[in-house]
Length: 242
Figure 1 (cartoon, rainbow, N blue to C red):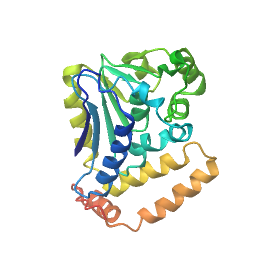
Figure 2 (figure 1 turned 180 degrees about the horizontal axis):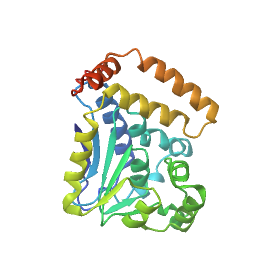
Figure 3 (figure 1 turned 90 degrees about the horizontal axis):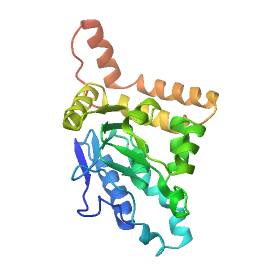
Figure 4 (figure 1 turned 180 degrees about the vertical axis):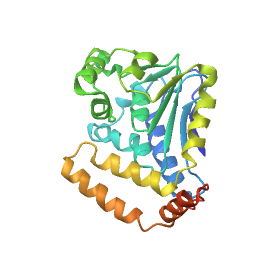
C-alpha cells in the first residue's frame, strides 16, 4: 500500500496549481510500481483539504485552467484501487479528487462542498460531471448551484461516500477495506475498474461488448484458473497478478 498525504500546515492542506501536477505524477509512478497494490489519498491534521489555491487561478491562462480536470483524474486513471480517506473539509478540488477515487471512506465530521458558485466560478476539475453521474443531476445541481456543504450522513444517504465512521475508527476502517480487497486477484480489480470507468456513462450495448471482451481476456489468466481450482478444492486461492 502507498499513501499520498496532502499536507500544507496553516492552510487546511490547500492544493496549489503545482501540487495538482505533482499528484498526477505520483499516481502515475505508483501505477507503474508492481510492489504497490493500493493507494490511499488523505490529508494531514484531521483535514482532507479546503480546496485549491484560489488566487493561483488568476495567474494562469484560460487554456491552462481549462485542462485542470486532466491531472485531477489521476486517481481514476490509476489501475490500482484508490481509497480516499476523508475527514474535516473536503472542498473544491478536494471533493473533485475524492470523486475520482474508487472508494470514499469518511469520518463523521466530514463536510463536503463544491463552493465555486460563491466566487463566481464553476467546478472545473471534473466536479460537475463526476458528481452528477454519481448522485444524479438533480442532487448535483442542488449542491453545485447553491454551493452548499454536505455533511457525512447526507453524503452516505445519497451515495456520495462509501462508508461513514467515527473519526477514531477511520484508519481501522480503511485498513479493513484494504485487507478485504487484498484477498482478490489484482488483475480482477484492475479490469473491473477499467471496464466500469470506461463505460459507466455509455450505451448499454457498448458496455456489454466491452465487458464481454474483458471477460474473455480474464478467462485466460493464471489467477482465474487458480481461483476456480481453489474454489473446487475448497482452499484459499494464491493469486500472483498474472
